[in-house]
Length: 336
Image (tube, rainbow, N blue to C red):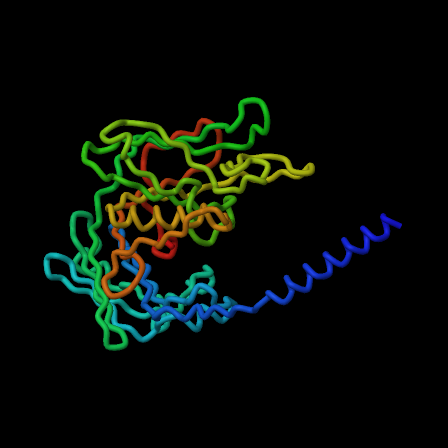
């Protein structure tokens, strides 16, 4: 009897607590508001190739993204100019008015909002050692930014090494010996794209794992670095995915990767922008990471206008392959 009485008392307490807690529930609606729409610039100029600029509008963080988003945020009615510090000015052309470059669509480029310098060969416009000021006139506003093209980064050689001496002998990393200049803030941005000898595997350049590198700890020193594809912790090879030599897969012969490696020497503004991009990507989905804004060198908008001293290397993934010369037969359509 005492047990029943105690149980009833306990049950009554539970019911009362539940009623009290439920009565305290209150829906709170938070008005996040909307941020002011801004022009977003992603512009690039490298030696001996045309400058190009992608223009879009900023989106609110919680906006839904779908297949129509790029169409909705692309800016296609701006006027874009670049002035070199010797007074030479080039006007960039919106890509939709260039019939001969519609092949870009097949390369999966977001051609909406793309402006390109089709006259870059005049005046040998894109050259190392010059400053380039970007002017964008849109919606009554003037957006500006300034960059310069540094010289190519001193690279002694590039070679291929097997990832593991014993297992998976077809898995390789690319290595390079860099001769860092004795000036500070020499930074590089590294991308790659692959084909298998007869068709592209990567239509556009992809950042390597640890794609942004500075000389903060190695200023003026000759040193070696390795390059891998970017992976995830839950993949077989982890975050540093290898490139592949000739191999058999399920009894079938698979050709080796042929890698176009792009090493871009950049100024300090570009380094700060791409470092902030890489840090944001590395913390994506981590609830304990501290949010951070992307660095921008664009006045009146957001984004980056960067100049790059670029070196290309054409590398067949064959163990002990060593390459000393840069690859200079890069087509204009291959720089993206």
